Length: 95
Image (cartoon, rainbow, N blue to C red; front, side, top):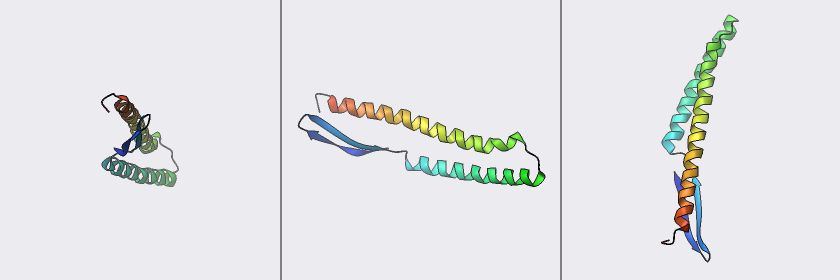
């Protein structure tokens, strides 16, 4: 989401913008990470009580990291495109 304003300055246009993920993405990621945090805690508690480490216990934390980096990368890519679009728009002669 892009929230901001465009104002005319003596030398051109000035864009003040804040870019952030959509609310539904934030909610989904919070639920995703929360579910996986609970799963990680359950698996860790079970492995500690059994005294045996299994590599499968690393899957939930790996999924959290994958989700986090997937969201960060996609947000960065989209925000870069939006910033470039807004800069081109501000520089266009029709503005």
